[in-house]
Image (cartoon, rainbow, N blue to C red; front, side):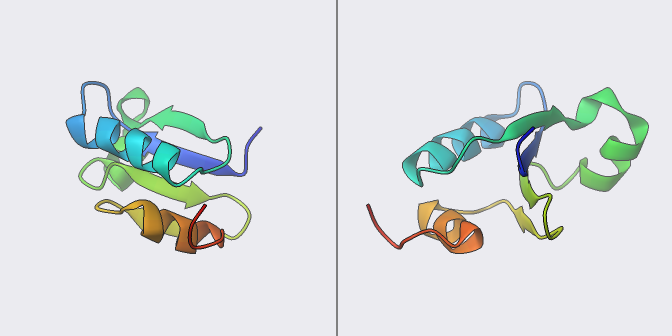
Length: 80
């Protein structure tokens, strides 16, 4: 299980963009969770997706974000 979760929706163009940003940022492996799968997730994340959550400390990065913001959030080096 990964320490990172990307909350997203089916057929979400912003979620597709977030996946590309995470790849560009060289983010480590993460788990994808679809908020459509549960009422509680829908209520919490329904209008906010995509959201990247760090399970270790509970921090969340809401969309919009770019590769630099992801690297800063994950405390990765500024550039590869």
